[in-house]
Length: 421
Image (cartoon, rainbow, N blue to C red):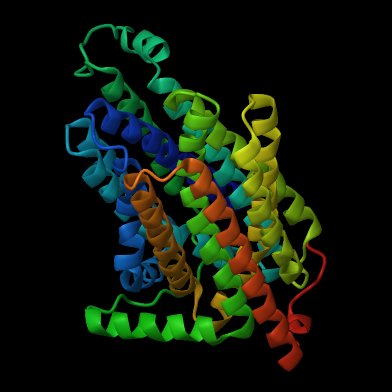
């Protein structure tokens, strides 16, 4: 990989690290203000609403200037959102501002891969970006969990700077300050992201034109035989993954009797599995073989059901690693295939915006359903069962659709399958 690729990865890592640490800090802030428990999944809802509402605009914005500049501007919006939470704005609203920055950041961070690298390296690049993103999730939830602990947070808070007094008076404010510094580090890396030299499309000022263009891209990707399969898989995966974050926290509290700080660590355990799966997929799966991983999605949904029978930590950890491993192994090739088809059909930024629209609409719907189930006080074991059966059933239907497409016309044989190591 060229050196610039590692700069892109570093910028992505620290930005995602801060996002995930901030989620735990926001959950702690909601509990400190004694907000209803169903507000917690709403954090994800408020974070992702910008991805859906602004999908027609962020793709065009990402394609209108060098991707590094887009990432820098977007990271500045995230820093502003983190600052709002520090100064007492409601965590839901502040996290929504961070989500606005993330929505603008995403088309740039994925779109630059298709501009900067040849198609044959996309699976490897996605293995890197998913592996590092998952590493950021692991460290992010661990850092967030540690910062809100009274003993660790209190020790950091008691540290006195020479010469001046800081306005940081609580553990929550200290945690948000550390997270803000992580965003700042990501912004520094953004300044050194390479310019790929790709021609940029001037940003149209007419919002109706942008909406029409986005709708055209959306229809184009869903009609493409390989695009629709990869888009369906990644849409389901991200909705399920976001919901699973909250399910794991609730399940760990009920089944394993863990507090928020420790149950957030189990999110990291799932993420370890995703990282392993992503790395293995990057080494084993070429673009042409990408569609062969779909059955693993069916298996993952069924294995989730085993969570209902686990009440000991020594069983919980390997089970969550296995669930994460299957997820990472099947989503990385699907992401690469989707980016490949999108880049060919409409350009990098627009295709990622279409992908984000679908994936985050899925997150809104699935976390919304979870919110309702928690509000209705449905047992977490019933929630786990419904979740596992839903994922498996939908993945089975996607697989049947792909087989029907292949019987009509073999599109897989046209994919670039040259060596990618």
